[in-house]
Image 1 (spheres, rainbow, N blue to C red):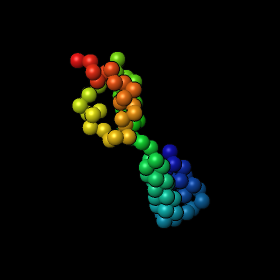
Image 2: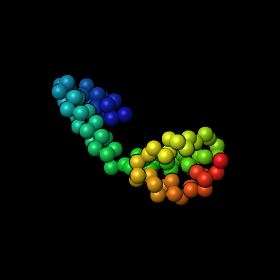
Image 3: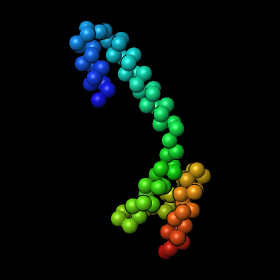
Image 4: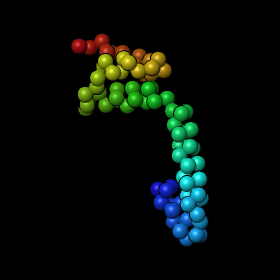
Length: 83
C-alpha cells in the first residue's frame, strides 16, 4: 500500500523517480529494522503449538528452534512427552 501511495503522490506533485526510490527505500529499511525486534522462533513455536489440535505439528522442527523458544516449548511439555 505504501508504494501505491507514494506513486500517487509522485504523479500528482510531479516528483522525480529519485523521490520514489528514496521514500520506498526508507520504508523498506524501516520494515526490516522493525522485524529485527520480533522473536521469530518463539512466535513460530507459539503459533504451531496453539494449533496442535487442528493441524500437523512437526516436533522435530520445533526442537531445532533457537533457545529463545524454550519457555514456549516448556509450557507444552506434555505434547512432547506423548507418543
